[in-house]
Image (cartoon, rainbow, N blue to C red; front, side):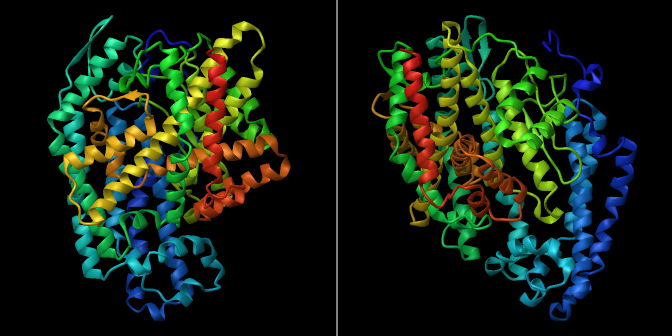
Amino acid sequence: MKQTTIPARSEVAAGDAWNLASLFRDDEQWNGELSRFSGLSAAVNAFKPAFASPDKLSAGTFADCLDAYAQAQQLGEKLGNYAFLKKSADESDAANLDRFGRYMMAASAFEAETSWLVPALQTIPDSLAKSADARLEAYRVWLDKLLRLKPYILGEKEERILALKIEGDQAPRTAFSALTNVDMDFGTVDTKDGPKPLSQTTWSRLMEDPDRAVRKDAYLKFYAAFDAHKNTIASLYAGSVNQDVALARIRGYESARAMALFPDKVDETVYDNLVSTVRSNLDALHRYYALRKRVLGLDELRHYDVYVPLVQAVKQTTPYEDAVGLIGKAVAPLGDEYVQTLTKGLLGGWVDRYENRGKRSGAFSSGGYEGDPYILMNYKDEVIRDVFTLAHEGGHSMHSWYSARSNPFMSYNYTIFEAEVASTLNEDLLFRHLLKQLPGEAGSAQMRAYLLSTRASDILATLYRQTMFAEYEHRTHALVESGTPLTAELLRSEYRKLLEAYFGPLMQFEEQSDLEGLRIPHFYNAFYVYKYATGISASLALAQRISNGGKSERDDYFRFLKSGGSRYPIEALRVAGVDMLSPEPVEAACAEFARIVAELEAALT
Protein backbone atom coordinates (compact mmCIF):
# COMPACT_ATOMS: atom_id res chain seq x y z
CA MET A 1 0.00 0.00 0.00
CA LYS A 2 1.52 3.31 -1.08
CA GLN A 3 0.70 6.10 1.34
CA THR A 4 0.18 9.60 -0.01
CA THR A 5 -0.53 11.06 3.44
CA ILE A 6 0.36 9.81 6.90
CA PRO A 7 -2.86 8.65 8.61
CA ALA A 8 -3.81 9.07 12.23
CA ARG A 9 -3.75 5.87 14.28
CA SER A 10 -7.54 5.80 14.32
CA GLU A 11 -7.53 5.69 10.50
CA VAL A 12 -5.34 2.56 10.23
CA ALA A 13 -7.22 -0.42 8.80
CA ALA A 14 -7.55 -3.34 11.21
CA GLY A 15 -5.81 -5.66 8.75
CA ASP A 16 -2.77 -3.39 8.68
CA ALA A 17 -2.40 -3.23 12.47
CA TRP A 18 -1.16 -5.87 14.86
CA ASN A 19 -3.76 -7.78 16.82
CA LEU A 20 -2.77 -7.66 20.49
CA ALA A 21 -5.58 -9.98 21.61
CA SER A 22 -3.07 -12.78 22.15
CA LEU A 23 -1.81 -10.68 25.09
CA PHE A 24 -4.98 -9.05 26.44
CA ARG A 25 -8.54 -8.87 25.21
CA ASP A 26 -8.66 -5.10 25.74
CA ASP A 27 -7.34 -2.27 27.91
CA GLU A 28 -9.83 -3.08 30.66
CA GLN A 29 -8.45 -6.59 31.05
CA TRP A 30 -4.91 -5.16 31.09
CA ASN A 31 -5.88 -2.75 33.88
CA GLY A 32 -7.25 -5.60 35.97
CA GLU A 33 -4.12 -7.69 35.52
CA LEU A 34 -1.91 -4.72 36.40
CA SER A 35 -3.77 -4.41 39.70
CA ARG A 36 -3.21 -8.12 40.35
CA PHE A 37 0.49 -7.81 39.45
CA SER A 38 0.93 -4.99 41.96
CA GLY A 39 0.05 -7.40 44.76
CA LEU A 40 2.31 -10.29 43.71
CA SER A 41 5.42 -9.03 45.49
CA ALA A 42 3.77 -9.99 48.78
CA ALA A 43 3.61 -13.63 47.67
CA VAL A 44 7.36 -13.59 47.01
CA ASN A 45 8.23 -11.69 50.18
CA ALA A 46 6.38 -14.23 52.29
CA PHE A 47 9.37 -16.52 51.75
CA LYS A 48 11.99 -14.01 52.93
CA PRO A 49 12.16 -15.32 56.52
CA ALA A 50 12.91 -18.83 55.24
CA PHE A 51 16.11 -17.56 53.60
CA ALA A 52 17.45 -16.36 56.95
CA SER A 53 18.61 -19.95 57.46
CA PRO A 54 19.44 -21.17 53.95
CA ASP A 55 20.88 -24.46 55.24
CA LYS A 56 17.44 -25.34 56.60
CA LEU A 57 15.55 -24.33 53.46
CA SER A 58 13.62 -27.29 52.02
CA ALA A 59 13.43 -28.02 48.31
CA GLY A 60 9.65 -27.66 48.47
CA THR A 61 9.73 -24.22 50.06
CA PHE A 62 12.48 -23.17 47.66
CA ALA A 63 10.39 -24.29 44.68
CA ASP A 64 7.31 -22.50 46.04
CA CYS A 65 9.31 -19.26 46.27
CA LEU A 66 10.67 -19.59 42.74
CA ASP A 67 7.18 -20.39 41.42
CA ALA A 68 5.80 -17.21 42.97
CA TYR A 69 8.66 -15.14 41.57
CA ALA A 70 8.45 -16.66 38.07
CA GLN A 71 4.67 -16.25 37.87
CA ALA A 72 5.01 -12.58 38.76
CA GLN A 73 7.84 -12.06 36.27
CA GLN A 74 5.84 -13.76 33.52
CA LEU A 75 2.79 -11.59 34.11
CA GLY A 76 5.01 -8.51 34.33
CA GLU A 77 6.59 -9.30 30.96
CA LYS A 78 3.16 -9.73 29.37
CA LEU A 79 1.88 -6.46 30.84
CA GLY A 80 5.00 -4.62 29.75
CA ASN A 81 4.91 -5.98 26.23
CA TYR A 82 1.31 -4.86 25.72
CA ALA A 83 1.99 -1.38 27.13
CA PHE A 84 5.18 -0.99 25.08
CA LEU A 85 3.49 -2.06 21.85
CA LYS A 86 0.52 0.26 22.36
CA LYS A 87 2.87 3.18 23.07
CA SER A 88 5.07 2.36 20.06
CA ALA A 89 2.07 2.38 17.73
CA ASP A 90 1.11 5.92 18.78
CA GLU A 91 3.33 7.89 21.11
CA SER A 92 1.08 10.93 20.75
CA ASP A 93 -1.77 9.16 22.55
CA ALA A 94 -1.85 10.26 26.19
CA ALA A 95 -3.59 7.04 27.23
CA ASN A 96 -0.74 4.97 25.77
CA LEU A 97 1.85 7.06 27.60
CA ASP A 98 -0.11 6.83 30.85
CA ARG A 99 -0.47 3.06 30.52
CA PHE A 100 3.24 2.58 29.92
CA GLY A 101 4.07 4.88 32.82
CA ARG A 102 1.81 2.93 35.17
CA TYR A 103 3.44 -0.31 34.08
CA MET A 104 6.94 1.09 34.66
CA MET A 105 5.99 2.25 38.15
CA ALA A 106 4.49 -1.13 39.01
CA ALA A 107 7.48 -3.03 37.60
CA SER A 108 9.95 -0.80 39.46
CA ALA A 109 8.01 -1.27 42.68
CA PHE A 110 8.03 -5.05 42.25
CA GLU A 111 11.78 -5.08 41.61
CA ALA A 112 12.44 -2.91 44.65
CA GLU A 113 10.17 -4.93 46.92
CA THR A 114 11.69 -8.26 45.88
CA SER A 115 15.30 -7.07 45.48
CA TRP A 116 16.36 -9.25 48.41
CA LEU A 117 15.76 -12.48 46.48
CA VAL A 118 18.64 -12.60 43.98
CA PRO A 119 21.31 -11.85 46.63
CA ALA A 120 19.63 -14.41 48.90
CA LEU A 121 19.87 -17.05 46.19
CA GLN A 122 23.65 -16.67 46.29
CA THR A 123 23.58 -18.00 49.86
CA ILE A 124 21.80 -21.29 49.21
CA PRO A 125 23.85 -24.47 49.54
CA ASP A 126 24.91 -26.25 46.35
CA SER A 127 22.96 -29.32 47.42
CA LEU A 128 19.73 -27.33 47.26
CA ALA A 129 20.53 -25.78 43.89
CA LYS A 130 21.24 -29.26 42.52
CA SER A 131 18.31 -30.93 44.25
CA ALA A 132 16.54 -33.66 42.30
CA ASP A 133 13.15 -32.16 43.16
CA ALA A 134 11.19 -32.22 39.88
CA ARG A 135 9.67 -28.78 40.53
CA LEU A 136 13.12 -27.21 40.41
CA GLU A 137 13.79 -28.53 36.91
CA ALA A 138 12.17 -25.46 35.33
CA TYR A 139 14.69 -23.25 37.14
CA ARG A 140 17.83 -25.34 36.68
CA VAL A 141 19.36 -23.30 33.85
CA TRP A 142 18.37 -19.96 35.35
CA LEU A 143 19.88 -20.90 38.70
CA ASP A 144 23.06 -22.15 37.07
CA LYS A 145 23.53 -18.85 35.24
CA LEU A 146 22.77 -16.88 38.39
CA LEU A 147 25.03 -18.91 40.66
CA ARG A 148 27.95 -18.67 38.21
CA LEU A 149 28.21 -15.07 39.39
CA LYS A 150 28.61 -16.16 43.02
CA PRO A 151 32.44 -15.77 43.14
CA TYR A 152 32.04 -12.14 42.11
CA ILE A 153 29.20 -11.22 44.48
CA LEU A 154 30.35 -9.18 47.47
CA GLY A 155 28.94 -8.94 50.96
CA GLU A 156 25.54 -7.41 51.65
CA LYS A 157 26.97 -4.02 52.70
CA GLU A 158 29.30 -3.81 49.70
CA GLU A 159 26.51 -4.78 47.30
CA ARG A 160 24.27 -2.11 48.79
CA ILE A 161 26.99 0.50 48.26
CA LEU A 162 27.36 -0.57 44.62
CA ALA A 163 23.58 -0.51 44.17
CA LEU A 164 23.42 3.04 45.51
CA LYS A 165 26.06 4.06 42.94
CA ILE A 166 24.16 2.75 39.91
CA GLU A 167 22.25 5.93 39.12
CA GLY A 168 25.36 8.08 39.50
CA ASP A 169 27.35 5.70 37.32
CA GLN A 170 24.98 6.52 34.44
CA ALA A 171 26.20 10.13 34.44
CA PRO A 172 28.78 9.78 31.61
CA ARG A 173 26.25 8.13 29.28
CA THR A 174 23.44 10.51 30.23
CA ALA A 175 25.64 13.59 29.87
CA PHE A 176 27.00 12.37 26.52
CA SER A 177 23.47 11.85 25.21
CA ALA A 178 22.27 15.24 26.44
CA LEU A 179 25.31 17.03 25.01
CA THR A 180 25.31 15.39 21.58
CA ASN A 181 21.55 15.10 21.03
CA VAL A 182 20.28 18.28 22.68
CA ASP A 183 22.91 20.88 23.46
CA MET A 184 25.23 20.69 20.45
CA ASP A 185 24.32 22.84 17.44
CA PHE A 186 25.47 21.40 14.12
CA GLY A 187 24.11 24.20 11.94
CA THR A 188 22.59 23.74 8.49
CA VAL A 189 23.76 22.36 5.15
CA ASP A 190 22.88 23.86 1.76
CA THR A 191 21.34 21.29 -0.60
CA LYS A 192 19.61 21.52 -3.97
CA ASP A 193 16.33 21.63 -2.04
CA GLY A 194 17.51 24.49 0.16
CA PRO A 195 19.09 24.59 3.63
CA LYS A 196 18.67 21.41 5.68
CA PRO A 197 19.24 21.15 9.44
CA LEU A 198 22.27 19.05 10.40
CA SER A 199 21.73 16.79 13.41
CA GLN A 200 22.44 13.31 14.69
CA THR A 201 19.26 12.22 12.89
CA THR A 202 19.91 13.88 9.51
CA TRP A 203 23.67 13.14 9.41
CA SER A 204 23.43 9.69 7.84
CA ARG A 205 21.00 10.86 5.16
CA LEU A 206 23.24 13.77 4.21
CA MET A 207 26.23 11.41 4.00
CA GLU A 208 24.32 9.55 1.27
CA ASP A 209 23.66 12.69 -0.78
CA PRO A 210 24.91 12.26 -4.38
CA ASP A 211 26.26 15.83 -4.30
CA ARG A 212 29.81 15.59 -2.97
CA ALA A 213 29.84 19.24 -1.91
CA VAL A 214 26.83 18.55 0.34
CA ARG A 215 28.56 15.55 1.90
CA LYS A 216 31.76 17.48 2.53
CA ASP A 217 29.94 20.43 4.06
CA ALA A 218 27.88 18.15 6.32
CA TYR A 219 30.95 16.15 7.35
CA LEU A 220 33.09 19.17 8.25
CA LYS A 221 30.31 20.95 10.14
CA PHE A 222 29.32 17.80 12.00
CA TYR A 223 32.83 17.11 13.24
CA ALA A 224 33.50 20.79 13.91
CA ALA A 225 30.80 20.57 16.58
CA PHE A 226 32.52 17.54 18.11
CA ASP A 227 35.88 19.29 17.87
CA ALA A 228 34.49 22.17 19.93
CA HIS A 229 33.56 19.75 22.71
CA LYS A 230 36.29 17.13 22.28
CA ASN A 231 37.82 17.48 25.74
CA THR A 232 34.45 17.29 27.47
CA ILE A 233 33.40 14.20 25.49
CA ALA A 234 36.80 12.56 25.98
CA SER A 235 36.44 13.11 29.73
CA LEU A 236 32.97 11.56 29.69
CA TYR A 237 34.18 8.50 27.81
CA ALA A 238 37.26 8.20 30.04
CA GLY A 239 34.93 8.32 33.04
CA SER A 240 32.85 5.49 31.59
CA VAL A 241 35.93 3.34 30.95
CA ASN A 242 37.30 4.09 34.42
CA GLN A 243 34.01 2.94 35.94
CA ASP A 244 34.13 -0.31 33.98
CA VAL A 245 37.69 -0.99 35.11
CA ALA A 246 36.97 -0.06 38.72
CA LEU A 247 33.90 -2.31 38.93
CA ALA A 248 35.80 -5.24 37.44
CA ARG A 249 38.54 -4.81 40.06
CA ILE A 250 36.06 -4.42 42.90
CA ARG A 251 34.31 -7.64 41.94
CA GLY A 252 37.55 -9.53 41.32
CA TYR A 253 37.50 -10.02 37.55
CA GLU A 254 40.78 -10.09 35.65
CA SER A 255 39.67 -7.23 33.40
CA ALA A 256 36.67 -5.18 32.33
CA ARG A 257 36.37 -7.28 29.20
CA ALA A 258 36.40 -10.50 31.23
CA MET A 259 33.58 -9.08 33.37
CA ALA A 260 31.49 -8.17 30.31
CA LEU A 261 31.88 -11.59 28.65
CA PHE A 262 31.48 -13.73 31.77
CA PRO A 263 27.65 -13.77 32.10
CA ASP A 264 27.28 -15.23 28.58
CA LYS A 265 30.15 -17.67 29.24
CA VAL A 266 31.98 -16.34 26.18
CA ASP A 267 35.69 -17.08 26.27
CA GLU A 268 37.88 -14.08 25.52
CA THR A 269 39.46 -16.05 22.67
CA VAL A 270 36.18 -15.52 20.75
CA TYR A 271 36.77 -11.77 20.92
CA ASP A 272 40.46 -12.10 20.06
CA ASN A 273 39.75 -14.49 17.17
CA LEU A 274 37.26 -12.01 15.75
CA VAL A 275 39.73 -9.12 15.77
CA SER A 276 42.74 -11.09 14.54
CA THR A 277 40.79 -12.86 11.78
CA VAL A 278 39.19 -9.68 10.46
CA ARG A 279 42.58 -7.94 10.66
CA SER A 280 44.14 -10.65 8.49
CA ASN A 281 41.34 -10.31 5.92
CA LEU A 282 41.35 -6.57 5.30
CA ASP A 283 42.48 -6.95 1.67
CA ALA A 284 38.90 -7.49 0.48
CA LEU A 285 37.78 -4.39 2.36
CA HIS A 286 40.54 -2.34 0.74
CA ARG A 287 39.48 -3.75 -2.66
CA TYR A 288 35.95 -2.58 -1.94
CA TYR A 289 37.15 0.95 -1.25
CA ALA A 290 39.24 0.90 -4.44
CA LEU A 291 36.08 -0.12 -6.32
CA ARG A 292 34.14 2.68 -4.63
CA LYS A 293 36.77 5.22 -5.71
CA ARG A 294 36.61 3.99 -9.32
CA VAL A 295 32.82 3.78 -9.59
CA LEU A 296 32.32 7.23 -8.07
CA GLY A 297 34.94 8.61 -10.48
CA LEU A 298 37.01 10.27 -7.77
CA ASP A 299 40.63 11.38 -7.94
CA GLU A 300 40.86 10.63 -4.24
CA LEU A 301 38.50 8.82 -1.88
CA ARG A 302 37.74 10.76 1.26
CA HIS A 303 36.02 9.75 4.48
CA TYR A 304 32.82 11.55 3.49
CA ASP A 305 32.56 9.37 0.35
CA VAL A 306 32.03 6.02 2.09
CA TYR A 307 28.24 6.08 2.54
CA VAL A 308 26.93 7.42 -0.77
CA PRO A 309 25.28 4.47 -2.58
CA LEU A 310 27.38 2.88 -5.31
CA VAL A 311 24.22 1.81 -7.14
CA GLN A 312 20.98 3.75 -6.97
CA ALA A 313 17.98 1.79 -5.76
CA VAL A 314 15.98 0.22 -8.55
CA LYS A 315 12.49 1.66 -8.89
CA GLN A 316 10.36 -1.32 -8.03
CA THR A 317 7.11 -1.58 -6.12
CA THR A 318 6.70 -4.54 -3.77
CA PRO A 319 3.33 -4.52 -1.99
CA TYR A 320 3.47 -5.87 1.55
CA GLU A 321 1.69 -9.11 0.67
CA ASP A 322 4.15 -9.73 -2.18
CA ALA A 323 7.05 -9.12 0.22
CA VAL A 324 5.66 -11.80 2.52
CA GLY A 325 5.48 -14.18 -0.44
CA LEU A 326 9.09 -13.42 -1.41
CA ILE A 327 10.28 -14.02 2.14
CA GLY A 328 8.36 -17.29 2.32
CA LYS A 329 10.10 -18.55 -0.82
CA ALA A 330 13.49 -17.34 0.42
CA VAL A 331 13.28 -19.20 3.73
CA ALA A 332 11.98 -22.39 2.09
CA PRO A 333 15.24 -24.22 3.00
CA LEU A 334 14.06 -23.98 6.63
CA GLY A 335 11.08 -26.24 5.94
CA ASP A 336 7.30 -26.10 5.71
CA GLU A 337 6.53 -25.47 9.38
CA TYR A 338 8.82 -22.44 9.49
CA VAL A 339 7.47 -21.01 6.22
CA GLN A 340 3.83 -21.57 7.10
CA THR A 341 4.14 -20.20 10.64
CA LEU A 342 6.03 -17.12 9.51
CA THR A 343 3.72 -16.44 6.56
CA LYS A 344 0.61 -16.84 8.69
CA GLY A 345 2.04 -14.50 11.31
CA LEU A 346 3.16 -11.81 8.87
CA LEU A 347 -0.27 -11.77 7.25
CA GLY A 348 -2.39 -12.52 10.28
CA GLY A 349 -1.83 -10.01 13.05
CA TRP A 350 1.81 -10.14 14.10
CA VAL A 351 2.78 -7.01 12.18
CA ASP A 352 1.88 -3.35 12.47
CA ARG A 353 2.65 -2.66 8.84
CA TYR A 354 2.65 1.00 7.85
CA GLU A 355 3.52 4.43 9.17
CA ASN A 356 0.94 6.45 11.07
CA ARG A 357 1.15 9.72 12.94
CA GLY A 358 2.80 9.28 16.33
CA LYS A 359 4.23 5.86 15.50
CA ARG A 360 7.76 4.98 16.50
CA SER A 361 10.22 5.09 13.60
CA GLY A 362 12.24 2.12 12.34
CA ALA A 363 11.38 -1.51 12.99
CA PHE A 364 11.62 -4.06 15.80
CA SER A 365 10.44 -7.49 16.90
CA SER A 366 9.00 -7.85 20.39
CA GLY A 367 8.43 -11.46 21.32
CA GLY A 368 7.47 -12.59 24.81
CA TYR A 369 6.73 -15.88 26.49
CA GLU A 370 3.00 -15.32 26.10
CA GLY A 371 1.32 -13.90 23.03
CA ASP A 372 2.46 -13.59 19.44
CA PRO A 373 5.97 -12.33 18.58
CA TYR A 374 4.91 -8.92 17.30
CA ILE A 375 6.73 -6.80 14.70
CA LEU A 376 6.64 -3.05 14.21
CA MET A 377 7.29 -1.89 10.65
CA ASN A 378 7.01 1.35 8.73
CA TYR A 379 6.81 -0.56 5.46
CA LYS A 380 6.97 1.31 2.15
CA ASP A 381 6.11 -0.54 -1.07
CA GLU A 382 8.69 1.39 -3.08
CA VAL A 383 11.64 0.74 -0.70
CA ILE A 384 13.32 -2.59 -1.48
CA ARG A 385 15.27 -2.52 1.77
CA ASP A 386 12.00 -2.76 3.68
CA VAL A 387 11.58 -6.30 2.33
CA PHE A 388 14.93 -7.18 3.93
CA THR A 389 13.90 -5.43 7.15
CA LEU A 390 10.71 -7.50 7.28
CA ALA A 391 12.73 -10.70 6.74
CA HIS A 392 15.15 -9.62 9.49
CA GLU A 393 12.43 -8.91 12.05
CA GLY A 394 10.63 -12.09 11.00
CA GLY A 395 13.78 -14.01 11.90
CA HIS A 396 13.74 -12.52 15.40
CA SER A 397 10.06 -13.34 15.80
CA MET A 398 10.46 -16.95 14.70
CA HIS A 399 13.39 -17.32 17.11
CA SER A 400 11.08 -16.12 19.89
CA TRP A 401 8.25 -18.36 18.66
CA TYR A 402 10.36 -21.53 18.85
CA SER A 403 12.09 -20.53 22.06
CA ALA A 404 8.88 -19.80 23.97
CA ARG A 405 7.37 -23.13 22.93
CA SER A 406 10.41 -25.17 23.91
CA ASN A 407 11.49 -23.86 27.32
CA PRO A 408 10.22 -22.88 30.77
CA PHE A 409 9.69 -19.15 31.22
CA MET A 410 12.82 -18.58 33.29
CA SER A 411 15.09 -20.04 30.60
CA TYR A 412 13.38 -19.18 27.31
CA ASN A 413 15.02 -15.80 26.68
CA TYR A 414 18.07 -15.96 24.41
CA THR A 415 21.04 -13.59 24.58
CA ILE A 416 21.88 -10.70 22.27
CA PHE A 417 24.89 -12.76 21.17
CA GLU A 418 22.43 -15.24 19.61
CA ALA A 419 19.65 -12.83 18.62
CA GLU A 420 21.26 -11.39 15.50
CA VAL A 421 21.98 -14.86 14.09
CA ALA A 422 18.36 -15.79 13.38
CA SER A 423 17.53 -12.38 11.92
CA THR A 424 20.55 -11.88 9.65
CA LEU A 425 20.30 -15.49 8.44
CA ASN A 426 16.88 -14.68 7.00
CA GLU A 427 18.32 -11.61 5.28
CA ASP A 428 21.04 -13.72 3.71
CA LEU A 429 18.55 -16.33 2.50
CA LEU A 430 16.48 -13.53 0.94
CA PHE A 431 19.56 -12.07 -0.76
CA ARG A 432 20.47 -15.49 -2.19
CA HIS A 433 16.89 -16.08 -3.38
CA LEU A 434 16.56 -12.71 -5.11
CA LEU A 435 19.88 -13.13 -6.91
CA LYS A 436 18.88 -16.57 -8.16
CA GLN A 437 15.51 -15.32 -9.39
CA LEU A 438 16.94 -12.52 -11.52
CA PRO A 439 16.41 -13.13 -15.25
CA GLY A 440 19.41 -13.07 -17.56
CA GLU A 441 18.43 -10.06 -19.65
CA ALA A 442 20.20 -6.73 -19.40
CA GLY A 443 17.27 -5.12 -17.58
CA SER A 444 18.10 -7.07 -14.44
CA ALA A 445 21.74 -5.97 -14.38
CA GLN A 446 21.03 -2.89 -12.29
CA MET A 447 19.01 -4.90 -9.78
CA ARG A 448 21.83 -7.43 -9.50
CA ALA A 449 24.37 -4.65 -8.94
CA TYR A 450 22.07 -3.01 -6.39
CA LEU A 451 21.62 -6.24 -4.43
CA LEU A 452 25.35 -6.96 -4.42
CA SER A 453 26.20 -3.40 -3.42
CA THR A 454 23.64 -3.38 -0.63
CA ARG A 455 24.79 -6.73 0.72
CA ALA A 456 28.43 -5.66 0.64
CA SER A 457 27.55 -2.50 2.59
CA ASP A 458 25.58 -4.50 5.16
CA ILE A 459 28.41 -6.97 5.81
CA LEU A 460 30.95 -4.15 5.92
CA ALA A 461 28.91 -2.24 8.50
CA THR A 462 28.21 -5.28 10.66
CA LEU A 463 31.41 -7.32 10.40
CA TYR A 464 34.27 -4.94 9.67
CA ARG A 465 33.05 -1.72 11.27
CA GLN A 466 31.83 -3.35 14.48
CA THR A 467 35.09 -5.28 14.77
CA MET A 468 37.01 -2.01 14.46
CA PHE A 469 34.84 -0.63 17.26
CA ALA A 470 35.47 -3.75 19.33
CA GLU A 471 39.21 -3.39 18.88
CA TYR A 472 39.02 0.25 19.98
CA GLU A 473 37.06 -0.63 23.12
CA HIS A 474 39.59 -3.27 24.06
CA ARG A 475 42.46 -0.83 23.55
CA THR A 476 40.91 1.95 25.63
CA HIS A 477 40.12 -0.33 28.56
CA ALA A 478 43.55 -1.99 28.39
CA LEU A 479 45.20 1.43 28.51
CA VAL A 480 43.37 2.35 31.71
CA GLU A 481 44.10 -1.07 33.20
CA SER A 482 47.79 -0.48 32.54
CA GLY A 483 47.66 2.87 34.34
CA THR A 484 47.48 5.16 31.30
CA PRO A 485 44.98 8.03 31.59
CA LEU A 486 42.72 8.61 28.59
CA THR A 487 42.96 12.07 27.07
CA ALA A 488 41.37 13.49 23.93
CA GLU A 489 44.75 13.37 22.18
CA LEU A 490 45.39 9.73 23.09
CA LEU A 491 41.88 8.61 22.14
CA ARG A 492 42.15 10.34 18.78
CA SER A 493 45.58 8.85 18.13
CA GLU A 494 44.38 5.31 18.89
CA TYR A 495 41.28 5.72 16.75
CA ARG A 496 43.21 7.16 13.80
CA LYS A 497 45.50 4.11 13.79
CA LEU A 498 42.43 1.92 13.42
CA LEU A 499 40.91 4.10 10.70
CA GLU A 500 44.11 3.90 8.66
CA ALA A 501 44.39 0.13 9.10
CA TYR A 502 40.77 -0.72 8.28
CA PHE A 503 40.18 1.75 5.45
CA GLY A 504 43.54 1.16 3.82
CA PRO A 505 46.01 3.33 1.89
CA LEU A 506 43.53 4.76 -0.63
CA MET A 507 41.42 6.55 1.96
CA GLN A 508 42.18 10.21 2.60
CA PHE A 509 41.14 11.42 6.05
CA GLU A 510 40.37 14.87 7.33
CA GLU A 511 42.06 16.30 10.40
CA GLN A 512 38.80 15.74 12.30
CA SER A 513 38.16 12.16 11.10
CA ASP A 514 39.48 10.57 14.28
CA LEU A 515 36.80 12.42 16.25
CA GLU A 516 34.46 9.65 15.08
CA GLY A 517 35.66 7.65 18.07
CA LEU A 518 34.12 10.26 20.36
CA ARG A 519 30.62 10.15 18.83
CA ILE A 520 29.65 6.46 19.11
CA PRO A 521 27.00 6.00 21.85
CA HIS A 522 27.51 2.20 21.94
CA PHE A 523 30.89 2.77 23.60
CA TYR A 524 29.07 3.70 26.81
CA ASN A 525 27.82 0.10 26.95
CA ALA A 526 31.23 -1.52 26.78
CA PHE A 527 32.02 -4.76 24.92
CA TYR A 528 28.63 -4.96 23.27
CA VAL A 529 29.29 -4.23 19.60
CA TYR A 530 31.43 -7.33 18.99
CA LYS A 531 28.21 -9.36 19.18
CA TYR A 532 27.02 -7.85 15.91
CA ALA A 533 30.18 -9.05 14.16
CA THR A 534 30.07 -12.55 15.65
CA GLY A 535 26.34 -12.72 14.93
CA ILE A 536 26.67 -12.04 11.22
CA SER A 537 29.66 -14.40 11.01
CA ALA A 538 27.59 -17.21 12.52
CA SER A 539 24.53 -16.44 10.38
CA LEU A 540 26.50 -16.39 7.11
CA ALA A 541 28.08 -19.72 8.00
CA LEU A 542 24.69 -21.21 8.88
CA ALA A 543 22.99 -19.85 5.75
CA GLN A 544 25.68 -21.51 3.64
CA ARG A 545 25.38 -24.73 5.65
CA ILE A 546 21.59 -24.84 5.36
CA SER A 547 21.51 -23.87 1.67
CA ASN A 548 24.04 -26.56 0.74
CA GLY A 549 22.82 -29.16 3.22
CA GLY A 550 19.71 -31.16 3.90
CA LYS A 551 17.47 -32.27 6.74
CA SER A 552 20.34 -32.85 9.17
CA GLU A 553 21.68 -29.30 8.81
CA ARG A 554 18.16 -27.87 9.10
CA ASP A 555 17.47 -29.93 12.22
CA ASP A 556 20.68 -28.62 13.79
CA TYR A 557 19.52 -25.06 13.18
CA PHE A 558 16.14 -25.74 14.76
CA ARG A 559 17.84 -27.17 17.83
CA PHE A 560 19.53 -23.77 18.09
CA LEU A 561 16.26 -21.84 17.67
CA LYS A 562 14.57 -24.02 20.28
CA SER A 563 17.42 -23.66 22.76
CA GLY A 564 16.28 -20.20 23.77
CA GLY A 565 18.18 -19.41 26.94
CA SER A 566 18.63 -23.04 27.97
CA ARG A 567 22.23 -23.09 26.72
CA TYR A 568 25.02 -20.57 26.77
CA PRO A 569 25.40 -18.90 23.34
CA ILE A 570 28.64 -20.59 22.28
CA GLU A 571 27.17 -23.99 23.11
CA ALA A 572 23.88 -23.16 21.36
CA LEU A 573 25.68 -22.15 18.16
CA ARG A 574 27.83 -25.27 18.30
CA VAL A 575 24.59 -27.28 18.32
CA ALA A 576 23.59 -25.40 15.15
CA GLY A 577 26.85 -26.40 13.51
CA VAL A 578 29.06 -23.35 14.09
CA ASP A 579 32.03 -23.28 16.46
CA MET A 580 32.67 -19.68 17.48
CA LEU A 581 35.74 -20.74 19.47
CA SER A 582 37.34 -21.36 16.09
CA PRO A 583 38.28 -18.56 13.67
CA GLU A 584 36.58 -20.49 10.84
CA PRO A 585 33.14 -18.75 10.95
CA VAL A 586 34.75 -15.31 10.81
CA GLU A 587 37.11 -16.45 8.05
CA ALA A 588 34.10 -17.74 6.10
CA ALA A 589 32.28 -14.42 6.58
CA CYS A 590 35.31 -12.51 5.30
CA ALA A 591 35.50 -14.90 2.33
CA GLU A 592 31.81 -14.30 1.58
CA PHE A 593 32.42 -10.55 1.63
CA ALA A 594 35.37 -10.99 -0.76
CA ARG A 595 33.18 -13.08 -3.08
CA ILE A 596 30.45 -10.43 -3.12
CA VAL A 597 33.01 -7.68 -3.80
CA ALA A 598 34.39 -9.69 -6.74
CA GLU A 599 30.87 -10.13 -8.16
CA LEU A 600 30.17 -6.45 -7.62
CA GLU A 601 33.37 -5.53 -9.47
CA ALA A 602 32.23 -7.66 -12.40
CA ALA A 603 28.72 -6.18 -12.31
CA LEU A 604 30.03 -2.61 -12.35
CA THR A 605 32.70 -3.12 -15.02
